[in-house]
Image 1 (spheres, rainbow over the protein chains, first blue to last red):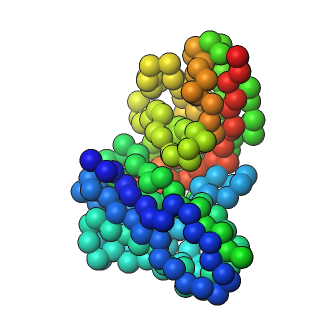
Image 2 (image 1 turned 90 degrees about the vertical axis):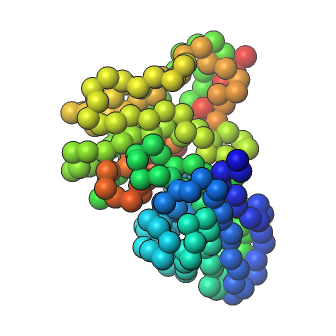
Length: 112
Length: 115
């Protein structure tokens, strides 16, 4: 049972480049989310999904797109990378039962 | 909107001692969950303990327990018999029921366990 798998684990981008962070879960969780972690700020919600075909914005959605075509996958797209998007990104999934999220191992992204 | 405050950026405790990490939150919701997550140097986010707001009994998980004071909106984590492996960043998080499991995190407390 792999849980939540994020790829890549590390990435360096140049300003203006685009890329997709991949996230897949094998627990048949309905809910999936993307968070970013910055020093001194905890984790902040970027986008979330309550099921295939349904997504919504979180606290810091600007510069990011998501889609959810299947229950298992929830990719995060950076449209035009900026240095302010340098961060650690976490994907997470859960059932709608209040038992909390299972997190992926994170992606450290550096935009130069 | 909810806010979660962790007022202790860093703490240190000796091995085998007990330490308490503080967390306060602000919400107008009546039904919610509270969590403590641990983030060791490996970066992995690990769920430590969970509390349902409608339950008065404090949650416990082995050496980890909480002191949940709903009226005061306080949710502290007590770690007993601290071990070197407890060295990590600890995050308090809030989730209102019916909000698509959206978590609001505090800024974290870095705990160092020393010999």
